[in-house]
Length: 311
Ligand code: FAQ
Picture 1 (cartoon, rainbow, N blue to C red):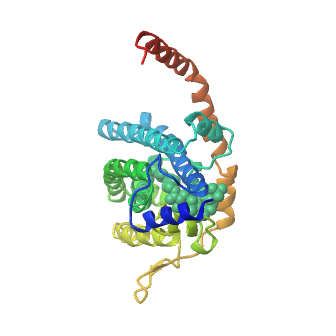
Picture 2 (cartoon, rainbow, N blue to C red):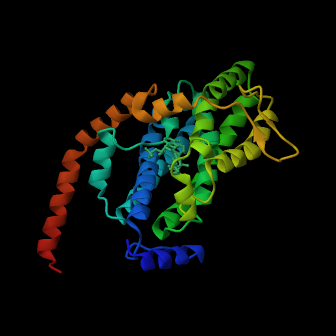
Picture 3 (cartoon, helix red, strand yellow):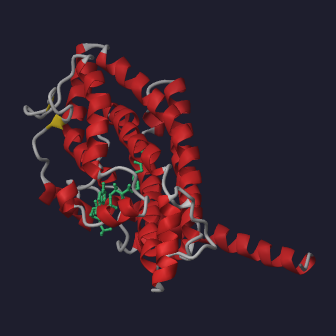
């Protein structure tokens, strides 16, 4: 790679400029961005499934409406992110194929079942909160199309967080059975949520380069800490507990301390061996198959328009 071009590129990043699709960029920057944005897009599409299965069972008309809107937004976020990744040269079809074949990763958290309505409230409150911490940081990054997609996503995600928090408070302050159901869901989701921000900084293979190139604007441990700092007090103040006896804020350092989550389990889950990986991919394969006719029809419409209105 041309050292002069690389130096000029790194200078632009250091100056806080945005890199745009037609600009020169190192092959590794392009490769890393495709990997990260593609994984993010897949996470939105697969992430719609655990909550999507609750649309018909959401308690009451208003919760149902909110959940439908939220799940639709998530699929829309997937579209925005696939568009951003496509600007780097990988086709959407290739990305979907890599998801369906199991080659591409997506977020660990969506490989767990949503057993009860309380699971949906934990996702809506805490997983959306975790996603916002990550996305607000990354939206200040160096690649223009990704940052612009994230800004819009964060805006919509703030609404998701509010509806999740509202549903969470309703269960936490409800009957003893509702509170127990919420506590149970919280206990099951806590470790996947701790995993969500990725392995500890010392074991994070991509962080150094991605932070140097301002793709990631905070390290995994810093994002985890920001999340704990903002949300653990909100959970505790509702009289709920978290399944980690070591969890506490160290007032001297200002950082949160916690038990190390099981990282072997995390790597198994993201490799494809979590409780729901097969089920999630099977649903997507089924949807891909069932939607084939409409994609084919759309492609034919495009061709006809080109013939009628030649450019
Ligand atoms: N899950 O070197 P690092 C959402 C992999 S959106 C699965 O630290 P990096 C919205 C990583 O890919 C959620 N794999 O990696 C919503 C790498 O493997 P590779 C998704 C993970 O990239 C809410 C290996 O471990 N958000 O939730 C995970 O520097 C509610 C080494 O790790 C994004 O994708 C994980 N959690 O940092 C929807 C945001 N963590 O590729 C529905 C963009 C790590 O070498 C309902 N992504 N790995 O085989 C990022 O910011 C980064 O990719 C991190 C990981 C921070 C996730």
